[in-house]
Amino acid sequence: VLIDVTGKNSFPIPVGRFREPMSSLRRAKYVIVSKSNLVPPEDKQDWLDKIAKQGFTVEKGNLFFLNYIIGEPYPLKNPQQRSMWNDIRGTTALASSIARPDIFKNMVEMRSPIREQYVFSDHYIWTQKDLVKIKEDMKKKNLKFLLITEKDEVKIRHLDHNDMSIYVAPLAVELTPE
Image 1 (tube, rainbow, N blue to C red):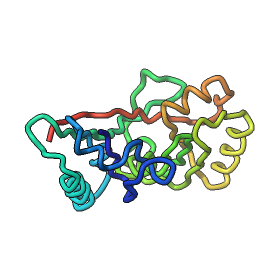
Image 2 (image 1 turned 45 degrees about the vertical axis):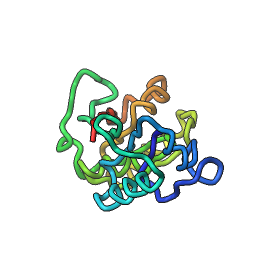
Image 3 (image 1 turned 180 degrees about the horizontal axis):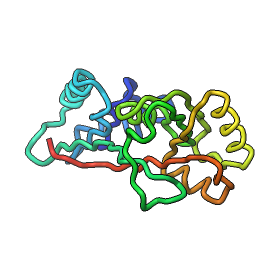
Image 4 (image 1 turned 90 degrees about the vertical axis):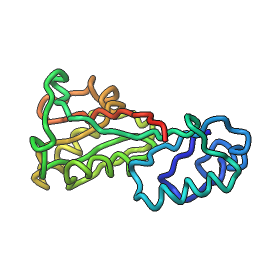
């Protein structure tokens, strides 16, 4: 059973974000606690207590943590060139069309402050008009860099972005036992 600990709601779809009810933990052989590195330790512990209350017994090798990690950004125009967070610090905007833009923003802000965020719906199809609007708004606000996800990179690489400094933030996951 996979449990996302970034929210308080433990109800299954359509009321909550869970695919199964918490009671399914009783029959689970393995539990993966997702995004536990993105919440305060006390929230993580609250979830571990909820898991225990459902009858899941933690034994060696049956509880894992799935941590989300953000890597060094790279320029969209030159993916082989890695940049440092300091290279884009202070004058950066964020744009994403993902399911949980708040998590992406929080991960980025652990590394660098964000001055503006442009959020599109999940699976949004980017247009040239979108990039032009963002570019104009960034110019007014004196922002130099636009940071996007790899998912968004795929959606905008075919658009004309040559006059923008767009960086891609690679995301990865790390699975570790308890």
